[in-house]
Image (tube, rainbow, N blue to C red; front, side):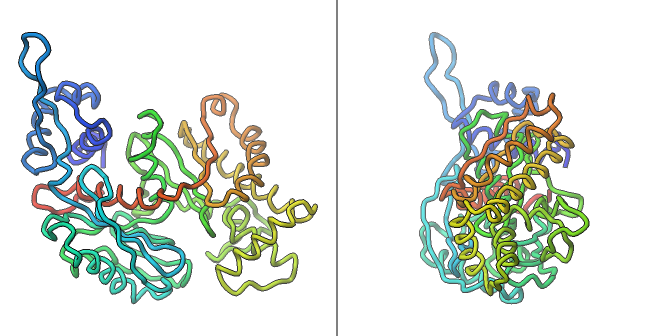
Amino acid sequence: MHLNDPDYSKLRALKLIRREGALSRVQLAERLDFNRATVTELAAELVRRGLLVEERSAASGRGRPRTHLSIDAGAGYAISLFPLMDGRATVDIIDLKGARIHSHEVTTGPLDDMAALPHLMVDAFEAMLAERVVPRELVRHAAIILPGLVNHRDGIAHWLPSSRVRHDLPLAALVADRIGIPVSLDNRAAAIARAEHWFGTETEGQLDDFTLVALLEVGMNASRYAGGRMQVGYNGMNSEFSHVKVAFEGGRPCYCGSSGCLTTYASVSGIASEFARIGNLSPSSAAGLQQLFDEAVRLADATDVQGLFDTAGKALGTAVSNHVNENDPGRVVITCARSDLLRLIAEPFRRAVDSRILSPIRARTRIDLRLLEEDDYRKGTAALALEGLYREDASGTPARS
């Protein structure tokens, strides 16, 4: 989609109004760099669709009252589902401004059977809808966040870390057919990036252009925003930054079937697996990997173990440097679920980016390291649902990316 497509223009307008609270048509035209006729037509359609309302403010002096446009929070709702790491999932109802008005926790069990996913997701949504917190007919879009490889554009789940068996499951369409509500699908790193874009506290430019690298509880990945739009590849895939190669001959083997992937060096699972190899240990599960990682942290002052974290920071810094040199994103956010990992890799990471990013670009690139906030996943899943709702056409059909 090009930035001047009508569908994307409406999405930009709605996101801007949601962020600002209310804007006049004149202000909207100035902020979007649109002519007034375009904004008048755009606003009229969004008012007809029930997404925007007009509010008249008292005039200052002798002029006419000024009309502002704002999101009609209660005109519709979205529902979002985010699986937790222990066989549970959180399902939220969100109003049109992005406020969470109700939350429900369900038990899904382990997500290790792709064939069972549609049934699990439908049951989770139906359990929430059965509570009738809002009229079902006002729930206009649903969103699902999954770990693993997904095709966001077409709503296809390809594999989950817990199964790693390749499928081409049209999960969004299957769930939508069952619950009668359009569904969007994406992965966990994309959710965190959406949380930053939709709910972050930086200035607007820094929320519209950035790359976010997420070091998750076990794995990792990244997403990039450019011009206020998440970048999606030709085949509908988000970034698979975790499989950028940082080593060649003799690189660590990766679960993807290749070797030398960034995730095998810089993620919790990669560090724990290498720690297990050094100690001739055999973790049997994701929980076992996290226990091994905890032990590696405890022993981090030992020369050989500290080297694991130095290598992790250097590998991450190398991959980020390559990305910055190629794409010049302006801002990079490294967000980490574990404070101990962030602490141990921060210095070697900084050394790597300072020495590997071209100096004129490095001087103009902001790089932040921060802990993953507890609510980031839920905010990002809500943002995915809102994005789908905002982009539906007048008939309620989701617009394609």
